[in-house]
Length: 64
Image (tube, rainbow, N blue to C red):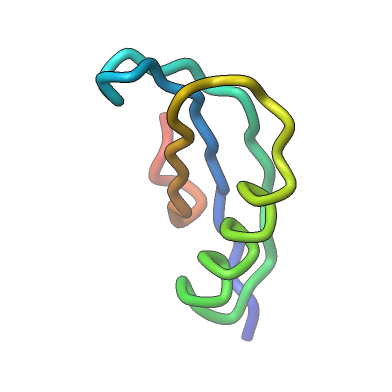
């Protein structure tokens, strides 16, 4: 059974504390691990220019 996850990628400063959301997408995946594999691909393909990229997969409904 597939679940919907929200994939978020943020571009951050050198301190990795000051971040700005740069990409958000919904991902249909069977597991969190599968969503995280998609996240790795998306981050590797990202062309945003920040010193640090952070990413996370969250279950749909967790974000307000």
